[in-house]
Image (cartoon, rainbow, N blue to C red; front, side):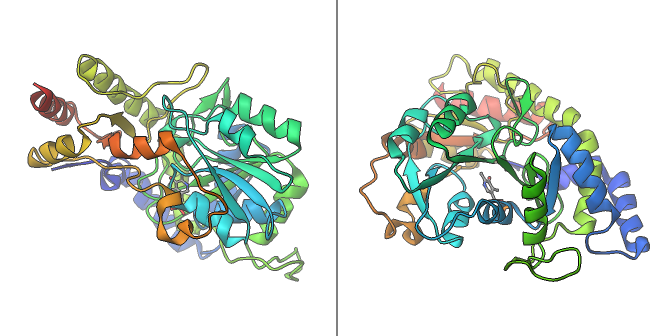
Length: 365
Ligand SMILES: *Cc1c(COP(=O)(O)O)cnc(C)c1O
């Protein structure tokens, strides 16, 4: 059986180093906010080309803390795609703000800047740009709109660690970048984890306080904060994985290129790469009107493709009654009926990929 992602294979690839790293944490006697978290924050900041990284408990927490750190709450509007992991939108609701859903670009599945522009009101405080599937959103247009209207941009980089936009890694372009290290993500821990990146020192200090009860250096709460610390063991694992990330990303790119070539003649839309960007292929998402049949056919061939995501957030019960307006997100609503995520991860073997490609060929043949 071949799955869409396979975190256990990643563990096996780097098992000796990971086991050693975990043993060292256990022997090191510090289990919360120890040297591994501090070192990971520095190493990840260097990797991203940002001044500050703060490790937190998850990607959802990273987004929630980012919003709190920008003083976004009740009465504020945050522009967000509906075609994203529900966590992106959950964070907005959790701080009491109002998500304003906008449509995506059909070619790239990321925020449509024209729709963003139209959605801006006097209450708009921020835009969350999601770099979906590993591909950077149109940051030049989004940053331009944000600057013009004096609003902040938060980058949701949960699916795009290491992707770059015009030579800069995502997460360092907007005011704040948010990362998830959920095990299936392209930089994945072996449990939950997340991080927040920013350039501003005061903002970094505030984020550091927010992740731990709002504490200052004297353990006095200066505001109400969360408990959302990156775990020391996960940080040690992430330091190992980060060392291999570029190599692992190259493997994903090679697999994606294999799909691009093999599927080019079939009636199937393959992922496009935006000019001036690099795609890190957290997911390899194709689109076809025959999605349901293809998915079923692949299952019979022991290939378990995924759908990211079958229900857009604005159609989910938890979010539907909060709509202030009738949303018509034509591209989003069509996209969710067509997309299929083919298996892609660094350890996917050539013969496994051949099996997937041959099954798809059979289906269309
Ligand atoms: C995974 C994901 C999140 C949430 O991350 P968690 O670590 O699971 O909380 C947020 N946004 C996007 C786009 C994601 O893919």
